[in-house]
Length: 45
Image (cartoon, rainbow, N blue to C red; front, side, top):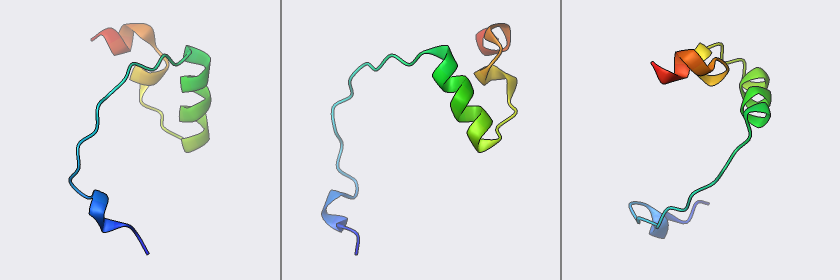
């Protein structure tokens, strides 16, 4: 059973660097074909 005491609670964020190759691996694994994940120019737009 899920712990519902955490629902709606906010937590601090922290920066996390991810290499492009890891993003590419993820989108290939999940089958997402959106070019913003693998094409730098598409992501800039």
